[in-house]
Length: 446
Image 1 (tube, rainbow, N blue to C red):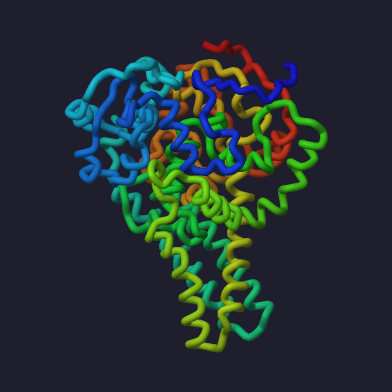
Image 2 (image 1 turned 90 degrees about the horizontal axis):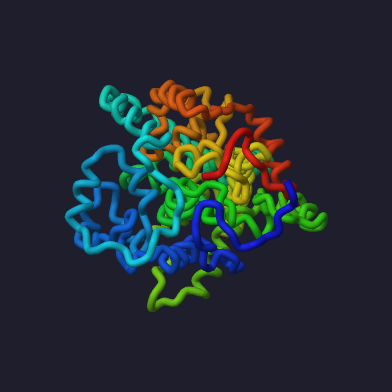
């Protein structure tokens, strides 16, 4: 295929997203763009109907934040994917206001005889035979272990006299911080619980996590609506567009800086965003629960001076080493988690179908090692395809649906690809220089 210039088009929508090309384009800009583009008229849109869920916000079983964040947007994909029973649809009808004036912006489909709905029905039937609570305690124990490890190694990084031990303890704490964030991701998708605050260890608010991950990336992976792709674009351009040799060079040049200072950059991004919001219209960016992230350096200072003697500067340095180690670990795992590669579909590539499930299959790939056990599944985003199809299910039960996924893939003649983590890493680096869109073999765009 020929090289494709960086034009304003989208494979899965009719409009190019507002605010996407602005330099500071975090979660709140993404939501602002959605409110401008989705023709939801300040309400909640599902398919071509508008609903006023204002009186239901505080009763939403998953937590009020989901509905507050999504107000004024089209929530069709989220509604279809996040719910695994017919009850939400029955409740929704009570809040119907009127039909939307404009057609839907999104072209993804949820046909009853399509891949996604077929897979979903089969999984719901299987789910009735599974005791979720008998499994999910394992995810909770692993999360709690990571939290304990983070706190223990963080305190060790300021207590020991030997600088080498301090440094290694800070690095170990950073690895545990990353694992805590990754394991906490399991709880971000579910109804509110204290474990959803795991991401606050690296100063990422859970509301922000839900926007850029659950509401953006999960529903529109590798598209121009995927914040986990676009937010890296000042440094990495993963989409197959025309890239000059200089642009490709800088794609690789920025790698060590982004990997090391990624979490610092995310915090700086939020600070810059506060300078651009319209306080009469936009929602706040910093919240009282952001202070949770500061509990770690405070604990380090208190414990450090109780068991030894440490200055605020030493705590600040150790805390930043933890941040950097966490960022490196997170980048190595997250950027190679099965979305970026030359054989994985990105914006501009052609799809066999815009059925939501087939779209997810084309934009996601599983890795052998990440699927091997629950520890790896939680820390390395394992059972990745099933997680994209059933995001609100605990990771500890996903293996129960593997045979259903395989059966559905055979029925719809979809390839269920598996690669190694090493191959995924190599492919991610190769994707940074890809400039050509591709036709999927024996497929035709609908």
